[in-house]
Image (tube, rainbow, N blue to C red; front, top):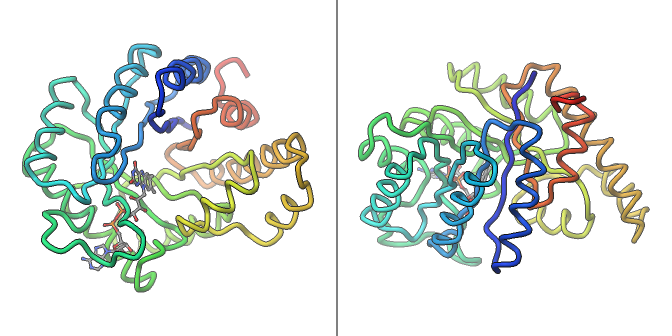
Length: 281
Ligand code: FAD
């Protein structure tokens, strides 16, 4: 059975945090490999990321994986965070750059400019303690000069010590298949796990996709637009579309599927059930 994992973001309020743990409990029945919790670049969610990780581990008794974005952090701060996670028995981490404030090209004098530098630092500071995940972009990172330069960057991250990768979400599985061909031709053989985005709200998805450079194919956009405010139809269409894409990915032999839950259990669980990856299905 293809393993699965789920991603949360830290909530703003106590009530939100309690509701999130209800979602975590619902997801736990599908026996995920781990839950990951995102991190605001510059450390904006530092305490809440940590709190969400610990609460989720307690609620579900399953492993958790912090995201760590290095932009705006000093080496000393990163070391402190890593040692803290080590002392909590956390041994898996996803090492990211994070995003620059809009309009900013480069942070001068920053101790970390790119994720590859963070990965190298984690290895240097903590040896083999962490299983390090990195981000991959089958549709090319929006700031990359070219696909080739983005692939070179992926190689740099693997050479620096990343053990595996999770992709930005996509709705065209050919982009993933092509990415896998390209890295295989480069001699890179780390597992690359597709990031899966359930479709529940067209406007939010369109905004988010624009920001992160994920492509919404025209046929998908047009169909979602046509549903207007009919959120039940959007959900049903989204569930079927994403389930079909996941079937193709599983047939290809993906190592695992990582769900961007947006803190909602039901849309991801529906897909997991459709795929027969749910213990009771
Ligand atoms: P990098 O690998 O450093 O790449 C960033 C860009 O720089 C790319 O265009 C790359 O081609 C280019 N580049 C890299 N090195 C060089 C170089 N030496 N010279 C020239 N160009 C170079 N963001 C958050 O803030 N918090 C999160 O929790 C978070 N979680 C994520 C989880 C996943 C699975 C994914 C896919 C993304 C996540 N992000 C998160 C978003 C991520 O931080 C952004 O996409 C960010 O813009 C790039 O991060 P990266 O780690 O891929 O950066």
